Image (cartoon, rainbow, N blue to C red; front, side, top):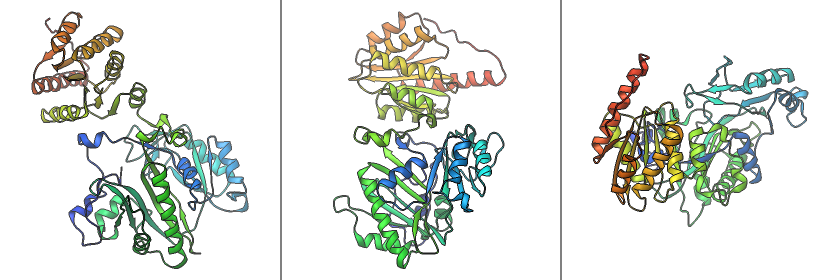
Length: 454
């Protein structure tokens, strides 16, 4: 997320507000941002992928138990038994692991260990525990693996990334001589130290662009040659694996002038799964929102948010407009859910079940404009879900378009009480007010029910 925003003009000029905005952490979700979904893989999986492209990496071993961590430390590959220091990292899909903390009280997701029993002890405090960082919020991420890596003594650390630039409609290289720290902080304090090179996707990566960026990142001599070679290999990976982000922080130089990728983040386009099957086997569903995982199994476009109003909508544009109008009425959406134009009754039923099962959702707003998607199919799916799991939460429905009268008859004949509205603003306003009533009642531990006339 830290580098997933579009870039403006080249960042070699004086500090400007535009430069600072490039790496600013996104505030909530404009609806357009919410739709972006990419496969994010663990660091140890990213190392496996980069190794295939010849990227220079420290020696490292992944472990799933404290005993495996102890054995990894002793292995000739890491050299811990020979007196070498080893770095142990918690594997969780979040940034800021080193400054994070575990819910069991253990501090830090990255440690340097000097003895085998120390590696085993620290692994035991990480594995099976929940790591909380600035990015995860209090919910945190469960750690099921640790990554043990040889410790390199570094002369300097730089930052490097490749991502898609929407404004440029192509890849862009980003580099900075200030690595090993949050790139957002660098952009805020010293935006003049962030450099970019735009790549013409048809012409490919040019040597002069690589050389220019390498120089701006502060590499010289042997290190410059190795940095240029590494950048070319990472760009090759970016193209051939359908990556949307390759982020290296730090891209490090040793006192001997050798360059290594010491930490990384790789994202891949979800739409490329059909031709990147091996990469997608590295997906860790346990790290993802369980609501999104369940929705994906039914080909539903769902992304969870933190609001209280569940949204069931057909079409991405209408979904975004629905989220906006909820915000304009003082509420907050709990999700982005687009059932699409060809959803079946079963898919609609599953979508409704996901919303109904979300504890954060206090009211459900169904907003359908029937075109290809018939209103009666939506109504039948909602009624079927209500019959299966009950109608525990207030439902506000706004239907317009194809078979809308048939849909209303389905709902009226179902025996379930739902609030109907022909106007989107009115429907959103009612959803917001009802969600507020439910939340207020829960806060003072009072039950509340709604009597809706037929």
